Image (cartoon, rainbow, N blue to C red; front, side, top):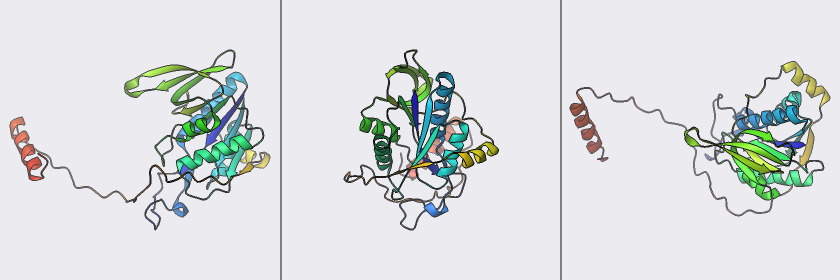
Length: 261
């Protein structure tokens, strides 16, 4: 079995974020990038499947600052092959990221056939969750998202995936392989790997590079950023005191004063 895991770097929101001069994007020069949390869970789910079924794991990432560290960490955890797509213009959209992934998977030797393609259901900098379904569409594979558990059938021709719904509802789906799954959370938290093991991987593992091809003009984006702004400090809450009928009267007066009632 071959499992392909798609990885993307995302801004570390612990750091102070700066807006670029154009006002429509974050300043890439001031960002610290880390592996997207849900992609980390996708890698962990692949490692769990490898432990159970002896699968081969290939980690494929889009080039970005600190991406080599993420790929060496993936190798230290148990990925058998690590590769990054290089040569893209910075600031690509989610749809462009998915198309770069699809191109690399289709063109690079050894990436196909893949029985499972796992990736995070969404990243913190693009909460639309479109990478996995667009990759699935480009490769003509079935797709299931918001997955929180994967188990292979004995025949290895299908997988049982647990999909999470609101209000604690879960559904179990039988997915024919090959397929693309958007991982919300792995069955276990992503494992810790010692720094010494990552440094050993840096000495012994080679990160392969796949040259990004020029994307055909996809037309105007469906959604565009008009302007980014920092959050403005809000005023303190006004506490209303008194009996219920008094408080309700005060509340109605405030709403009427502000034209909201």
